[in-house]
Length: 475
Image (tube, rainbow, N blue to C red; front, side, top):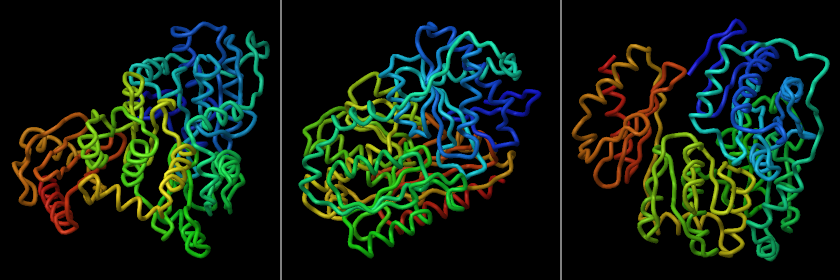
């Protein structure tokens, strides 16, 4: 979806609008988008309900947030803006807790430092569903980017969202059990909003804690606020050096998790989802559906079958998982990109809670995290091996690939028969032996992502080679 305005091009993706600061993410465009959101609010809420505003640690994010607050106050809304940068799950929880008209969150999540973004979070405390974002996008064209007047009919106040959120999080965790385990934990804030939140919960849980990068740096130390791979080298080294039980991190707005086991392995989100699904069932006696996106491991399906739980597959984007959480009881919902939520929590991904649940699982089991990983994979009849190709293609080539796979899907891939073809999000080939391949075209760039999962590294390599070869021939 994109709307062209005289202030540049504003594109809404799966989770709001993101742009490059001072290029398309400008103060006039922020005023324009805020007015488009306000036009939606007029149709959904009465003005006796406050609008909340929060922001992450990016350059000018706090100033963009204040600009939005001034626009909303000028339109007669009561606005409550956070007293400092704030995790997305924290403002989402407060959106529900404070009976608000929803919240505006200024963040570009795990994107590089030049980016900022804005997303609207409705009062149900999860990502806005497509019908809401479609309405906001439709409002943009007619929205003005003028400065607000000097005589607002609404009001702006500052509030601290932290106490109520932490009080709620403690109801989902067994803090005493974590205390009894005397864990040694390393925490890399990656200059993110989780500092002052995750480290406080860890300290309240009695761990021996060492923290890194717990201050605001709008350049994120020259890296990216993304809790995986090369961004976590310092955390991995600290875990190994001091023989810690666990390394923890979050992304920029703290809705995604990063986990390092005691051996210094950075766990994939797929692996963490398995470990926590098992923990919630086995140790905490929880039940409910398991929900995953089309790109997330099918080992979760094996877990669901083993315990007689419903399994749901959604398009990519946590908003679809959140929507299912609002419809039925969900034990755990998650995605391979690093977001999850659980039964009893808000329908929004939460990196702070995810990190603490891993610490809790270790405390319950009294075993190293690497051992919990092995046990969870074995119980789910694994392992399965995953890979993702990011193929940069011309628009014509991209279109040809999608047309070909849509009209003439292959009958087999790397010698494995295709049982079924799904079109929930992109094109998914469900293969025999529990394998699968997913092609997802990017909506914003000439790129096709190819996800795959199968039962051996050798077969994974064969599938990847065959997919690359087939796609290249369609160019």
